[in-house]
Length: 268
Image (cartoon, one colour):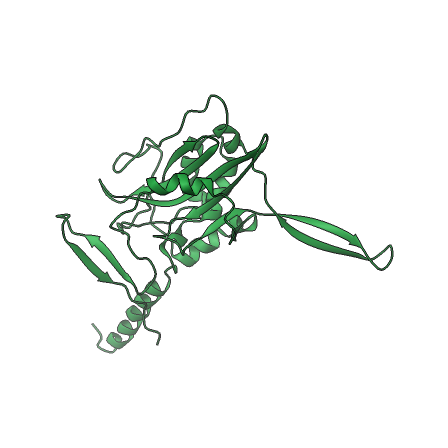
């Protein structure tokens, strides 16, 4: 090898490694689009359809590889029902025994033909209280200063999701609570995992979802949260998530934990 090339290659590979480390989301959950999940949930005819949709690459919802095996994780969907409240739990298996919840869609019936929902990212993967909901604007027009002058005031309103096919499916008299039949090593024949995209690429791909679904600081769905709390699933494989913190992983023996320090790349 030409010795003059060695310094160049060292700089090149150092830059590539640094770029790879920098191109990581602030939180692991940012590689799963909560807005995208709601977008495909709105169009789904059933929870089985919904589970298929979030696991299809071209829908740009899932970019998670929590067990770091170089392939996208399969997301399962399970419904927890209590009276007129539904909690749709999105989870993934990290190995034969470890299961990690990713997000929950809480749905509450608020009237005869009214329902509201929010999706919340699990606190192991997202920043605390990361909540997303459907977005709509009511534009109220006030006439001021003569007949040709108008003042339009956009007001954010809560979306009634009762007419969504997925919601009507859940509240149909014949509905049977859905529990995904899939788990680690047992996946649908149509599903083929793909390699994760860099986060910046994925963020761009799922940008259209953010037009109609926005983050909110207001928790509207409260009963669903109480229903879900005692049934939440977390994994010892996922403990911390922000860059520069500690990730704890089990060894093959399952008794000892190994601490791996994740540090952001140095800026040159």
